[in-house]
Amino acid sequence: MAQVLIAPSILSADFARLGDEVRAIDAAGADLIHVDVMDGHFVPNITIGPMVVKALKPHTTKPMDVHLMITPVDPFVDAYVDAGAAIITFHPEAGPHPHRTIQAIKRAGAKAGMSLNPGTPIAAIEELLEDLDLVLVMSVNPGFGGQKFIDSQLRKIEALRKRIDATRKDIILEVDGGVTAANAARVIGAGATALVAGTAVFGDGPDMYAKNIAKLRGAGAA
Image 1 (tube, rainbow, N blue to C red):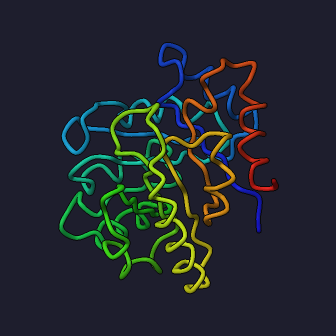
Image 2: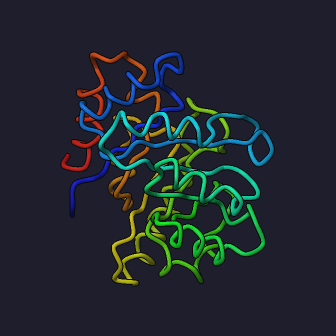
């Protein structure tokens, strides 16, 4: 199995010094920079627009992994790709034509992902799986950081692992929500190939970012 990717979520970073924070996690060994975009409508919070992504892009050499928890998605795809998004992930509930959204993301020059909330079944993306570059399993209900991991999502990760393997395609299986050094081994063991972590990376301050990232990554080898 390839080394698990670590994607620190800047939702848990110090927003007063985001550029410094992004440079710090890049230097600490992050593989992706995870950006949670919330609109206060699809989820009960408001976070980051394309202008912030554009401002942060020069501070990192790592791909910007942008998770759109918004509706509609299509009108904003080009703006986020132009701002520097390398991956755009959206939810099947965000619009009536998810295949069209995937096409729009790829046409704009980014990789396309789809995300499943805890209550969203795999069937919601099954017919589109082979068109995707990434599947994101939400192991908390989206909207806020610092929530507890929902254990039932391990079964979903396992089931998705089998479906992804059956496609024989290199599709990232990412997990976001309550991921910590204590449960990362179970998440990776269930089949995840990328971990989004907010508090588990940022919670102890900049001096610990490298150690925190290494702990998460090391769980896959345990």
